Length: 150
Ligand SMILES: [Zn+2]
Ligand SMILES: [Zn+2]
Image 1: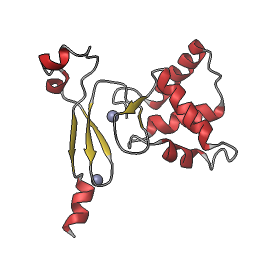
Image 2: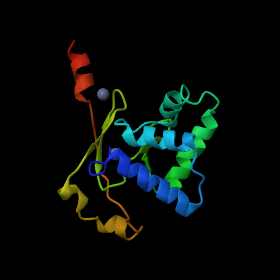
Image 3: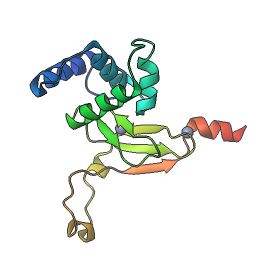
């Protein structure tokens, strides 16, 4: 979740951006956006689809998938880097870092000024223009740790 903004504010912002980009604001799109933005789990399109389907039985997985991709193009959400088979979406477009649980795939946001301002190694600076720093910590989350102890 975005730590500074309320869901209401995010929805306002969403509607404004859709208008600016000429994307039609439909109840389905609002529902999909709301679902992503209030999710704490960096959901995949499959997860969003499962939550939206009971509300809009006619919606197809493809529509959900395409909607999420167009939100990404608009900069409303982001795609989380290399997390397995399905794309995972992140409603938090602020500077932040990730912990990824190798057991259950849970992705937890965290903030760290020190990581934000890491020195970029020369080696990669020569080869590419760096636009964003994201640190990914991997391990076992507390939930999974509990299970392992049993
Ligand atoms: Zn876990
Ligand atoms: Zn995140």
